[in-house]
Image 1 (cartoon, rainbow, N blue to C red):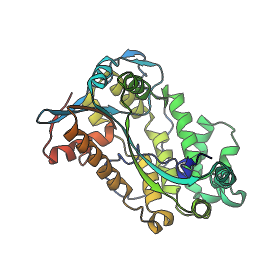
Image 2: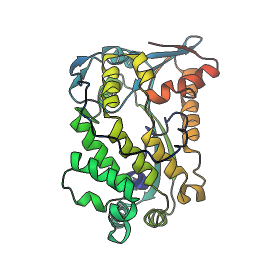
Image 3: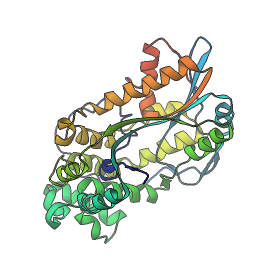
Length: 340
């Protein structure tokens, strides 16, 4: 029987390295912010055919790495003019996939079925508790205001873990703003790579879990505190939707300077830190995930640069432009960087 490779905790923790691209950790807040007032969006979402951003050129000698900065969410109704990217992929020798993070367990098909009920339970609060029971009263009041607006009378979400509930709220909120999370870049790159006979290279930072049942038990027993993740996601819904629209529009029209100015406090980074600081992660030596993710990608990218005349890569634009992000690290190692 073929062994199935099941990413046990990714489904539970909703963690990917769209979170490892986070910029420097935000400063500690002085106090809990007051609930943000509900306000209507003032910026219209662009639609139709749009150019997207140009490509960053990283080079040394005659070797070039072309990088496309990606963003999410994007306008729900855009058609990306992808000719430049398709042409570069066609002449490249290697395509690097975006960074990601996975916790994997080698289990057979029946083992996966046996773990599924425990994993499902882990997405819900213990002992049938509701969000009202596990969140501070002021935070729960803020949640209720946004839930009424974007999720209506959905009662099932009240029994889900805070970070799961917050992610559902966020998805509903950005949809209401005319934004979407459907892939725009990857289908184009995938098709171009296939046409060029290139198998894209994974840059996923992988951790093997030899005791998935124990890991799920730790998660259910409160292996990490996801209230901080919940609060950051909620705050993003409360105050950041207009800025998210501006940022999505900036990507669509290729306004790189606006993308520099529209970086947001990283809510997903808070979720990643919750995982990295958990007892599960510490006990297994998984600490400092953000820095390890950067180092892992840099190793793969530098090998590709040294080997290929041309390489194409995709990176989250926030991590690309951060003061200690990918471009800064490449420049520090002696590569020339040209902005589109």
